[in-house]
Length: 267
Image (cartoon, rainbow, N blue to C red; front, top):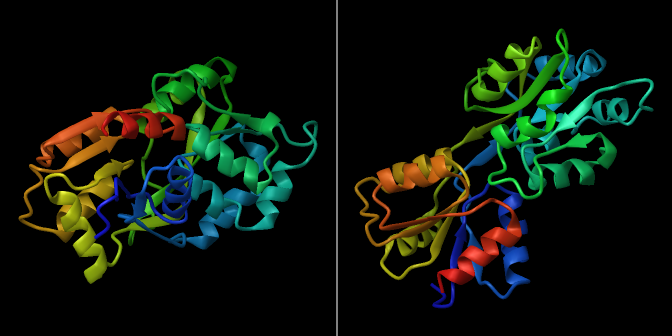
């Protein structure tokens, strides 16, 4: 195991590899250890039906970059959202700059994307609502594009807090599952890397999902995490890491600059 390794990036691919490269550009040695495997939607017909009804929605809310990638995997959906403003009024909501960047790379015009303020304390549904809540009108509908667990064919009730706010404003919320999230296969190399991260003085875990943390704990049952350090990108994830027994848990916003600065501060 490289002695200079400083960070284990646990995001699913392709984000994990992208983060490793971005951190390397800042002279931070990182390795990808994805703790979530991304799969196809459980109900492609339901996804296609939602894509065909884009004009019915005042806004599409994407919970992650993967939600955007899988929703726009069909060029039909992207072609609809790129229609002139007078033809389709749908806004596109992103909980943070990472998802907004993915949407832009997919071809969604920047003028259509709403996201939290750049100086928001966190990038999440709560901060997003501060930016978009006053624009929603009674009777309007919002489509939340989310992921589902393996074997979950229902739209589910993710993003409950945001849904409650939309309904309180007189709107309605629909859900569609664009992809599935499951536990990855942990081969010998991945398990060795995970154990290295559990050791005192090992690399810092970059945790961006409570589900990813659950997959890690399940892969190494009985493992002590007292010597491990974690950098969590949301208070709820930090709380989960502390409950799991991580010896040191730090918090920061999920933006790259914030993460890099936090990593440097732990040196």
